[in-house]
Amino acid sequence: MSSKILIYGASGGIGSACAHLLAARGNSLHLAGRNKMAIETLAEELQCSFSVGDVNDEGFFQSASQAAGESLSGLIYAIGSINLKALARLNRTDFLRDFELNALGAALAIQAALPALKKSSEGSVVLFSSIAASQGFSMHASIGMAKAAVSGLTLSLAAELAPNIRVNAIAPSLTKTPLAKGMLQNEVLAQSIAALHPIPRLGVAEEMAELASFLLSAQSSWITGQIIAVDGGR
Image 1: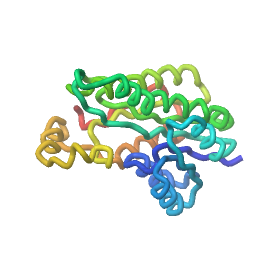
Image 2: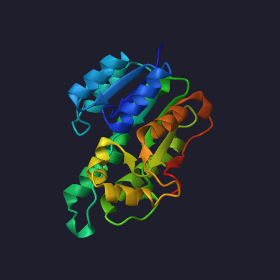
Image 3: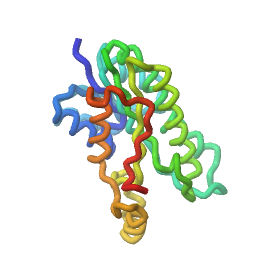
Image 4: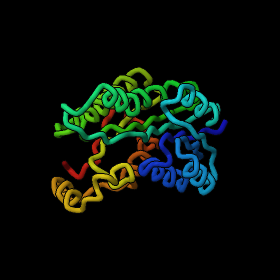
């Protein structure tokens, strides 16, 4: 029975970088995302199957998992948000939206894929937390809270799903992706943020993809329950 890697957020910056790298290394993929044109184009380029839908739509996780096949060797949930507001400007909708997209979505994606992951001899899940979950930054109350929930989910599921399914998370600092475009359009701001890192630059999606590929591989078979920072030493 052949296995696939299911990638949510495959049309985003980090998700598409993961898809390109994993396909180049001979993995079979199933892509999932809401941008129909981008997902179809990427799937055609990489010669893989795909599902189009929104993670906030009830039933999408189940349909994407079923379309991916009976057995999954890996799952990447590369969906996130950057919602930077002062606490006084945040409302209930902000908090709920960030939590549902980042943390609840990750949990439901894994839940739907669990039967297929269990059929693989060694399944691996890669989630995305953030440096904001472990360090305090102004204007990050909502997203920091949501990403901290991803870290907590990682630890809980690593314990619960062991030994056959490993669960790890990557915690990037600011990375050059379309999601961060609004911040990075201001060159002065981008340079000032880059300078805060001991390695004084911003991350790129390919660096996150390299770690994701490693965490999905047999070379990381004794690694689980880790939240690994890719943050230039920040």
